[in-house]
Length: 243
Image 1 (cartoon, helix red, strand yellow):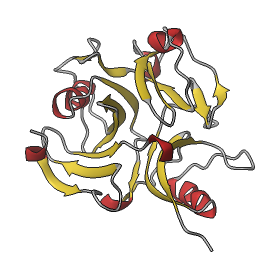
Image 2 (cartoon, rainbow, N blue to C red; image 1 turned 120 degrees about the horizontal axis):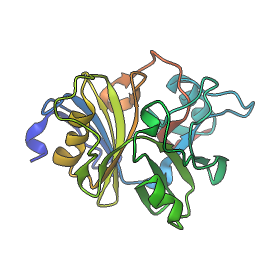
Image 3 (cartoon, one colour; image 1 turned 60 degrees about the vertical axis):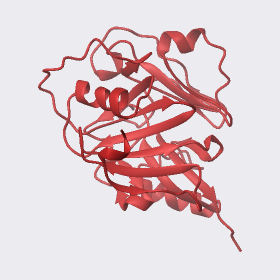
Image 4 (cartoon, rainbow, N blue to C red; image 1 turned 90 degrees about the vertical axis):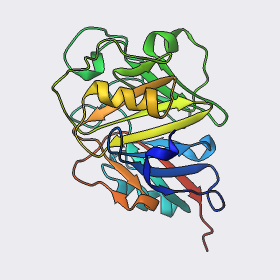
């Protein structure tokens, strides 16, 4: 079913067997990156001087200095005016911000339930905040955002099919040990975006990462959004042979 919806596809079956990306036209216009190789997927916020990277260009340059080639990147969770995360943030095994268990307040982050995207070298999870809080998952990387788009195969019941708030949106979903990172290429509602994860990608759980500032870098899709400064970013990079 998914193949019939693709108008443009790039497969990394030989050179990059654990990541692939494509654009879709229906039911919404979107760019999708599927990641299976968790060992090369990380979260990034601050450089060695504790200054936020802010852009894919700066992050890519920093990774190249570490002999790594960035194939994909995306904004990865909501952040404060100083670019610090609103909720839980774990980078390379170090927790920089604790789990945010607030349930009332203003903003998309607090639309319930919100959730956590977390992974280590062998497993990834997307869970509601309450579920994650009670779990014993050993995360190497984690970012908290909200709201959850899809929960146990069902669209978040806070979303209305006839909603009128249309925005460029991005999020992440999980199915069969694969992570799907999606950005809409046209303004969509929460419901439309969630339905794309549930019905097209068949993800059991999916988490909203942000809207309006949504950005993606995808080398093989010739995408490098640079309109806004960003806080936390998720990036897939591979080792380079450096001299």
